[in-house]
Image (cartoon, rainbow, N blue to C red; front, side):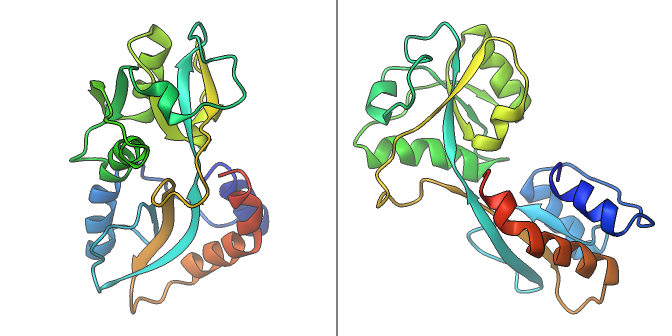
Length: 199
């Protein structure tokens, strides 16, 4: 949204947008009830046939480390280097995609994730990393959060490794005409390659 909104507002200055920030499990019911026109979500494994989903791109994971951490100065890290590290992960009930990404990255490398702390919001998770409680695997966009004492390092993953990225989709209610939503999607489509390059 920080990238999309300036583009959309410059093209459609008269349109008023109200942002609602929630987890996917809370946004989808709002779409179904008509309280939202469009949502940007992690696509669920089982998709409601009343909703349309447009896959936008997949986000790259990085590891958030305390700046004092032994690996914080490296250009990249391997999952094998994180095996004994205490992990801060989101609750699976509210953020299954982010939670499962961490677990899968370890399992696909033949290791078990050592969960030390569960937290919910990315800002909280990264803040806990800064206190030295543990490390966290987060989407690359999280590195834009200015948190003292935290460094983000790319994870080196084999290109053929499955399920190592987080998909992001636009979703809306099928069969509902909405000119403003269509304008937003038009702006998004024209700039999608630019947004995906930073994901």
